[in-house]
Length: 220
Image 1: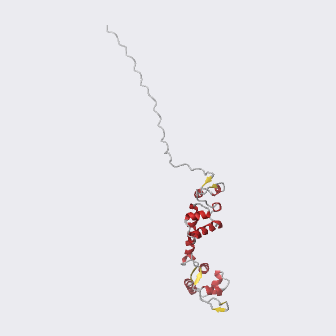
Image 2 (image 1 turned 120 degrees about the vertical axis):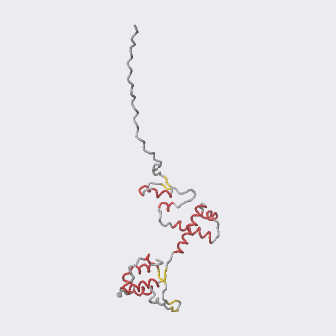
Image 3 (image 1 turned 45 degrees about the vertical axis):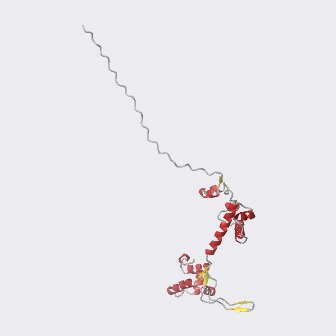
């Protein structure tokens, strides 16, 4: 008789757990972390620091510049010592014709420091040359006369009161309405003159008294 074959039971497939998907990681920032202020900073780095930190810092001058310590500790203020150094550097250059190396040796500073002092002195002189101390008084006089058309009660005396001038006669002379007072020098009498210019600060006071901004007037 044929032998019976016994069928083996088929094993059920084993399901393997699927790996969990990880959430995408955030993009890495390429920005560098802000560095904490160190105890020593150079002068050009001061604007990066808060005001409350400045008092705790030690400022280093640029190498070779020999910057004035007082100027570093008092930025924006006038330093008489540096002003004298600038004038001396300019005098040695223009009056004695010294080279920048000779100026540095004479002042006992580095060549770089001597160059800085000389450049600053030249810049100051050019700035003063461009700064006007007087302007023609004719445009100021025309503004006053134009204002009188709208306000007949506006006299020189009233304008002097509004502008804070102590004397209306002085204001009339500034505007060119009256000659200056006569003067006696070495026994000779010199007659007054009609002014054709006016100081900038006086002109600014006049136009402000007329209700005009000084920036709207040429030269102010």
